[in-house]
Image (cartoon, rainbow, N blue to C red; front, side):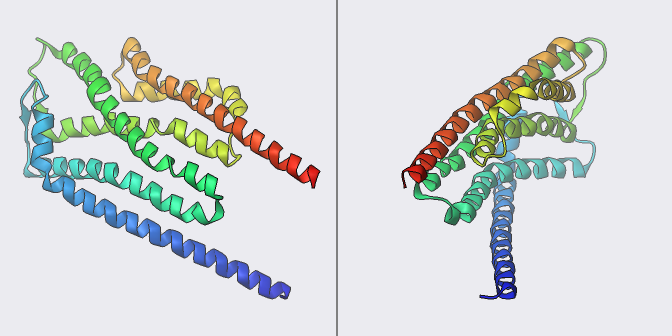
Length: 253
């Protein structure tokens, strides 16, 4: 095969891979659209569940407010269902380049992504949301008349829960990047102080301007980063052992 033919073959391979990846993203988008429809169909059940947990009366200021609430509900349900499907599609995309053992181990990432995403949503909704909301209500108690719109309240919930859903994926991302050789636990340790600073800033963005509450919100983010270091260390150690075994095999040959 000539040099020009090799270049043409490589370009064909890249085109084929990009086409396959595009198809997998397309089907993931279809799943998101269908999941969004499911969330929109059960919008009243989800709305009633959330509204029954509210210690005040929600108000609608315009007909579009309730529509945006239903869009938020559909979006969260769409993310919850699409995330594991997208992870499965990405696993199927990289599977041909993996050994049987690597494929079997990496398949565990798919349910783990869904579980961590759901845990992050639950943590943001049942813990962080109540902490922030009780603090804000305590500031206005007996001072002003409280009136909360449906649109603003559901936007508030989305701003609290969705970031934590993605933050909970950090340990898994660290494991994956370490397995690829992109990340090491030593690098994460060296950049720990910068990561802490970023996480504290994020904690201030997700919570009211109260120092104690900001620390409470930032604390789980810091714990997630430390957990990411631990998971990275485990994967890195196994990777070194595997590379050492391969080197020993080559030396014996």
